[in-house]
Length: 69
Ligand SMILES: [Zn+2]
Image (cartoon, rainbow, N blue to C red; front, side, top):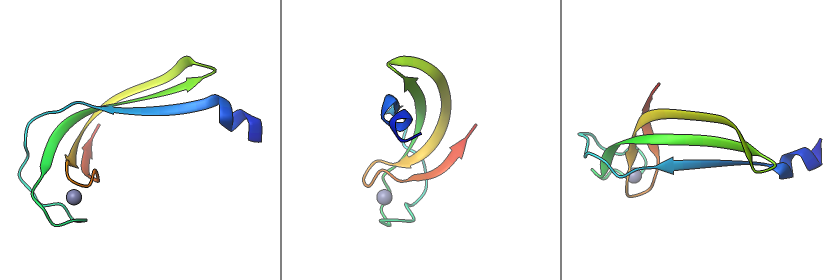
């Protein structure tokens, strides 16, 4: 099953978006954004799984503070 892992890659795309109120729990700065995130998993370069969701992320350190499904 080890070689199977090398064929799968997962990408997470995040679009720039609106600022959100809140403070980052990791770095303590107020750089929070509400961003639509798209996660796509590919197997042998063929997309097999794709999911879009919204999250509040810190634009400074990149940590996800809250996610909506
Ligand atoms: Zn942060």
